[in-house]
Each structure stands twice: as C-alpha cells, then as structure tokens.
Length: 122
Image 1 (cartoon, helix red, strand yellow):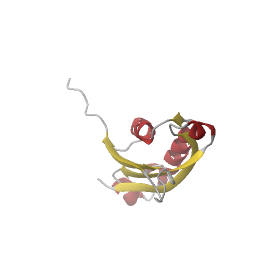
Image 2: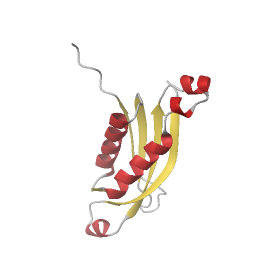
Image 3: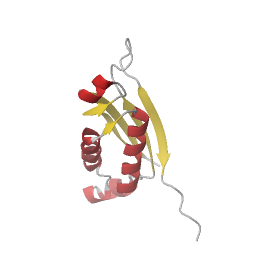
C-alpha cells in the first residue's frame, strides 16, 4: 500500500480539560499518513484516479474547528472514523499534537493507526 500524506495541518479548536481551555481556542497540529494505491493515478495522470487530499484536509479542518473535545485521544479517534468512513483509504496513521500542552516541550499528543473494519462474513 502506498502512502499519501498531509503534514502539520494546523487548526484552532476548543480542546482540554481545564476551565481556561474551554474558554480559549488553541491550535492542534495534525499529520495524516493515508494508505492508498496510487498506481491508477500514476498510470493515467488524471486527478479522478488520485486521492483527493485537499478534500480530506478541508473535511478534517472543518470538523476539528467545530469540535469541543476534552482529550486529544477522543479527537484523534473521531478524525480517524471520519476519514475511514468518507474517503477511499485502506488505513491511516494519524498524529494529533497539542503544542505547548507540557511546559518545556514543543508538542505533546497521540499517534494512532486504524484500518477499515473487515467485512462481516456472509
């Protein structure tokens, strides 16, 4: 499986458990590695055969901007669910970082990997 990626997608959102975090929007940083077979797009050189990473970026950005999660873990699971349900990717690796969450660190967050659920036997 090939990988199409999006790096450092930054979105302002409400995220956190403390009162001040619920009142002030913060930036989260998102990386996506998307499992997608690029051979058809490479052979045809046509956008119709490629993964629409711009549409994925817009969908994720819009969702995150409107969300109000307490935990980055919950946000990451929600993003993964949307991408796998709405776009033709076989799996994804997703990093959600919350810059400045830990004093002295540049970034803190989670990395998850998820795939499409296997089809139920008939």
